[in-house]
Image (cartoon, rainbow, N blue to C red):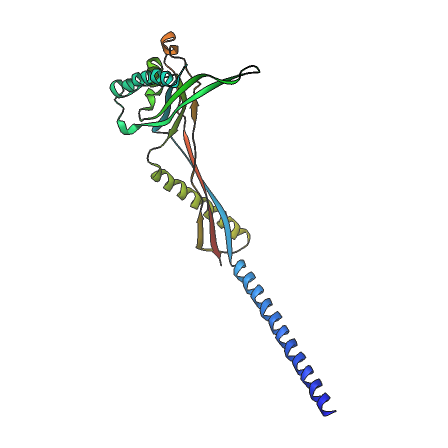
Length: 251
C-alpha cells in the first residue's frame, strides 16, 4: 500500500508541475502578444509617392541595314557596303564619337522555302547589322535619321529618349516621396488625436523611368530622297517615379 501511495503521489506531483509549466507558458505567450500589439500601436507606416517630369537631354537611336542575297557571303558583303556609307555619314558628316556608336546586333541567317516535292530548301540569306547611336542634340534627330536612311540604312528602330545624369533627378524624386509620406502620416496622426514622432525606418523602392519612344518602321533606302521633308521626332518628357515605405512614431 505504501508503494502504491508513493507512486500515486509522484504522478499527482508530476501532473501539478506540468500544469504549472503549461499555465506559465500561456501567460508568457499572452504577455508577448500584448507587448507586440503595444509596440505596433506606437507607430504608423505609410507609402510615400514621388514623381518628377523632366525634359530628356539624350537619345539612343537604333540604326542599321539589312541585305538579302543568294549566298551568305554575298549578303554580308552587300550589307557591309551599306553600313560603310552609314558609318561615314555618322562619323564624317555628324562627327559622332566612336564611344557613342556601338554594335547592337549582327547576324547572317538563311531564309527557307518549303514544297511537298523538295521539302525545306534554303532560298536566300539575310545579313543584318544594327548600331546604337547616342545623340545629345535632340533637335537634330529627324535630320540624322533622314541622312542615314539616304546613305543606306533601311532598318531604323526606336528612338529612346532619356536623361544622361539620372542621379540629381532621382534625389529630387526621393525628396518628393518623403514629403508625401510625411503629409500622409501627419494626417493619420491628427485623425487619431496623436502626435507624429520621428522616422523609425524607410524602405526604398526602385526609381522607375517612363519615357516617350518614337517607333519608326523600316525605311526604304530612297525614302528620304523621294521626300525632302525632314522627319519630325518629338522627345516629349521623361517621368521619374518612386515609392517609399516609411514608418513613424506616434506619441
